[in-house]
Image (cartoon, rainbow, N blue to C red; front, side):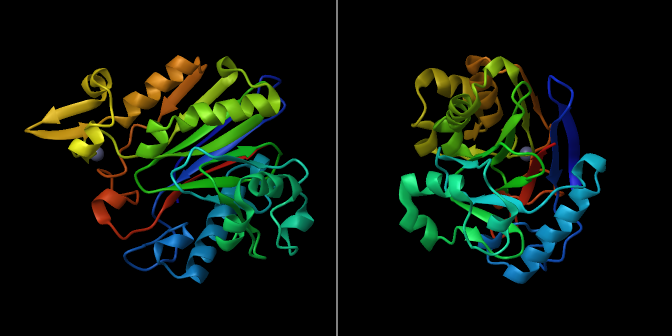
Length: 292
Ligand SMILES: [Zn+2]
């Protein structure tokens, strides 16, 4: 069910963030989505995905006593952008249970960008406590006991946690997100929202495709400046491999992030994770986080 779980306390030691990275085991989906596929858009049966998510959330609640209050679960329609939405403070349980709206503040966020498109994409609540926040690739968590998840199969699932202000962000950072510096955008959004300072931020990066497996073509190499190519493209037997982990480390360093950890696992090498590169049609695993 979970490949990794952790809790990071805030500075005041009266709260913090609990997070868990799922693997592909312990769900109900059939091949090629076996078994804990958490994403609806993959072609898997919606009812089974919903069952998987509810099952995973129940396991999350049982991680420890701090998680017992986890109510509902937010996620994004991820589009490889650098757009960030806020899981709003004024989000109430009524919003989640039947009005079919994603909460006033979050809807304002969506409206300000492209409401019509979001609605077409099905933002809102399905009545099962699973809430789509619309199209975005970073989600700010501002309220306790409201879990959210980011979904991946080779892209990097990332958690930012501001220890001082007890706010967090979940980030989907694939190649386009890393090239577009989505982590910098998310940090800027956190700073706008709660005066987050980079030095107070703890970062966790879950399993993603690493340079051992991430072969790219000339077109991708051409998007990097020559210095970046030297640093981030590894050449082996005439083939090119992209090192997104090093790009992220450099970005964290340049931002002045206080502390960061990478789970030392490649989603493409390691069969416990879904990998789009390895399997094509497949499921998605998730990084789930909740403020406590
Ligand atoms: Zn690998």
